[in-house]
Structures are given as C-alpha cells and as structure tokens.
Length: 595
Ligand code: PEP
Ligand code: MG
Image (tube, rainbow, N blue to C red; front, side, top):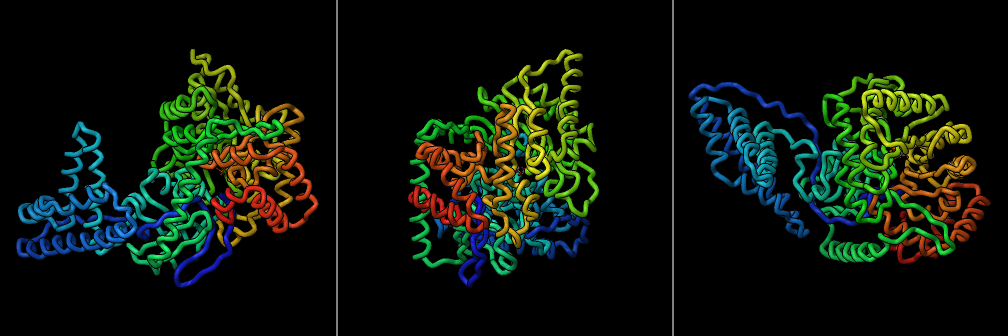
C-alpha cells in the first residue's frame, strides 16, 4: 500500500512510510556491509597455540551473539528450525576440531584453517544426493562466516547471512540484495531511506514482508542485534523494545488482521465486477517465477507485469538467449492458460547489474533507462526479443516496452520485434501468431502523446511509479520528498484520464501496473478514469476484488466528479480517504490509516 505517515520519532519508536502491509514482531538484525577477504598465511610452530586460542574465542563469541538473537526470537515465539540447525553446526565439536587440526598439522593461520574446513564440508554437502541435506550446506556456510567475522573482528555482512525470522534494519537495501531473499526468510525490514515506490518496497510487497521504510537516519547505528522490534507495515510505525503489554496488543492486532485476510480469500475466484456490471481485470505483478502459484491462489487473472531486470542481477555476465528463453517459457507455462505481460529490460536508475558496463550517469533516472538502453544496446534488446518470441509458442505472451517518451521509440521496438520474428522464422522457429506489443505510459511525454502512440500499440500500461516521479518532479526513492508523492494529484489523474481516452478511441485495453493500482483507496477513481485492468502485488487482489464487487461504477464517477472540483492534492486525498473509509469502515480499519 502506498501512503506516507507523518515523520515522527521518539525513544520507543519511529514513523516512516507504510511500505508493505502486515504486523511483525521479531528480533532486530542490523545489516552492516563489509566484504570479507580471508587472510591466508602459514604460521611458525610457536604461534600454533595462539592461533588455536583465537579460533576457540571466535567460536564462543559467535555462540554468544547467535544466542542473543535466538533469545530475542524465543520471546516472540519465532524460533525456527533453520536457526536451530545452524546452532547444531556451531555446537558440533568436529568443526572446531578439524580447523584446529589444520592449524596444528598444516601450520595454517586460524582464518585459513577454518576456511579450508568450510570448503571441505561444502564439497561434501554438494555431493549428497538428498536435496534437503544439500541445502544444509548454506547453514554451515552461514555459521562459519559468522565465526570468520568474529576472528577478523568484523561485523556480519549481507542480507543472505541474516538469520531467518529476524527484522532486518538497514540504512537502505538494494533491489539486488532483496532479490536474494526468499519468501519467509526474513520476517520484516526497516530502512532509514526509501519511499512507497522504490523498487525495494515493491519487492517487499510481492514477497509479503511487512516493512517500514524512510524512518530517517540513526536507527541502524543505535540499535543492537536481538532488540525486539514491532514493525507495523500498515501504519508505517516501528516500536523499539516494546513492553509485554504492547507486544500483546500488537499480537492481537496481527491475529485479527490474519483473520481478515483469510476471510478475503472467499473473493479469489469471483470476478471483480461492480454491482452495475463494470468488469475490472485483476492481474499480478511478479518478479520471480516462483511467485506465480501464490498469484494464482490470490485470484490473479494473469500477470500484468513481469520485470525481467532480476534475471540480469546478482551475476557478472549477461543471461544468454537460451537462459532467457527458459525463464520466459517457465513464466508462461506457470500462468497458462492466462496471459503474462513480460516487460523488456528496464535497467539503469536503481537497477544496475554488474554484468553490464554502464558508465555512471549524473542523473540516472533521467538517463539511459528502459527503451533508451535497448536503443543504445540493440544486441541486448534483440537477444531478449528472440528469447521472448521463442517462448511465446508456450503460452499467451504480451511484450511491453518501458520508459517510452516518443513515438519513434515505439516504432523502433515494433521494427526490432518484426525483424527478430522474421529471422527466427527463417531459422524454422515460429512463435505465437497472437504476440502483442504494448507500451508503458510512464513519462509525462508518453501520456501527453498517448493519442499518437495508441494506434501503434496493442495495449497501454500505465506505470504510475515513474509517471508520478517525472510529473511531480519527485524522486521515487527519496524519503525527504515522499510526502509530495501523491497518486491523487490532479496532474497525475489528468494524465491517466488522457491515456485511457486515447486507448478507448482506438479500442485497445489499458492496464495500470504501478503501485497506485493495488491501493484500495484508489479503486473507485481508477475505475471512473477508465482503467480496465489493475496489476498489483498479488496479495492485494482479494481486497481489491471485494471493494469492486461491493461498489457501483456510478459511485466511482460521482467521487471523481467531486475530486475534479477540488484543486489541491492534499485536499483530494483527504476527501477520498474520508469517503472510502466511511463506505468501507472495516476494510480501511484493517489495512491501516494510510492504506
Ligand atoms: C512504474 O514505473 O510504475 C512501473 C510499474 O515500473 P517500475 O516500478 O519497474 O519502474
Ligand atoms: Mg517504471
């Protein structure tokens, strides 16, 4: 849900942006980033006892630190099996035994001795046929890395090393870091920087990790690991070391909230149709193929946005055509017989993979992003299009091009797609005959010339995250100006309306895939503006379906007319909030004041 809470601090808590809904209670894990370079050297015989002593001290320090975190978990009832497994490795005497022997017999320094034992164990686990046992290799790496850090006097680094079930607290997180996290790994997160539509927030929403971002500086510095935190991702509030009474109160709210969510599941198989017969299609935004089963469980009628950037992240090379083909085919097969909109690469800005040599730009959000990069590097674009066309034979594919700001970019994209399709046909490979090409409307330029673009597109998809950033001149990642980032700003509404009119004139559909689409606060306004498909974090679909089904399109039109009579963005927001909260008191109480 988007929305900002008033920035506010006190000794027991912080307020920030309500980034991803839900309440979580857990021990803090402060993320500190340092690269670990393991020193490897030989020691003299007389140094052996000293090295062994260092090893033993590092083991006991690590035990004590993990114990602190574990205690915090116990208090909140979050203690998980994975964490227990890691403890077992640490307690197992053979790990220390073998490292000690490496010092004594091979005269290795303590770090090298332990690292060598880790490599041996990793190789051993890797060779195990049982996947469960193979997975335990990551537990042992986690434990050994913690001991190595203690040996070297370093803080633990990286999100991957966070113990499961913790609330991660960081100055900021990158999309690449969060992309390494699996659903259920971390319980929640709090960042000092960030805003409702920064990519990290968007990923948190699809992973359903309750989070609050933009709480301001100093939190990570002042907090010790294991401190109990309550993260209220709906209200945008973080409570530090709360009293047992407060914990009990939040547990009650969390359980109530869980019950409300369960009740909403009744709507998943029903169409989002208003009482007076207007049908809105509900689609899911996904970043990873393994999110698709959940998207279907929440009632997604297709995928409205699959961001391909994540295939290019956390690696040093570019994914090959075959690798991309397999990934896109997997998406289409998982969502079949429904459709998937797969977006061509939108690298640049916040998302820069290490495999691509992009020179630093002074103003990346205004630089070589999206289709601009595809024009600058047609080799990358064409490889992706080839993979997409090949994959289209395996399901219902729609391709979408991001960051369009002129007609020539649409025409370029269409020409490249035609050329690649021709080329593949000559090679004897045919894709789907119904492959569609859509255009993202996410720059004010594209929205303004949507009447010129629409005749060249099979569909339009409004990306409000960027559309607002460029229209309102507000950096979508900057917490200091997050309060200006208002989806209901009349400038934004007019551009959406203009886009819908342009699409209607040539008879093509309009989707909205920016975060504005998943906020129930906006549902009536978007219906009235003429957006026919809403694509959002899948977990928001049941609530949106309920809101639409309990409404009439006429009510939406009346609200829009009232909004158009008001001038100021704040005034409009206030009016819509009051109106929707009166109309849906239970829903708006459950999802939090800021939606
Ligand atoms: C958008 O800009 O609204 C959008 C959906 O794209 P992204 O968030 O990936 O920039
Ligand atoms: Mg965008």
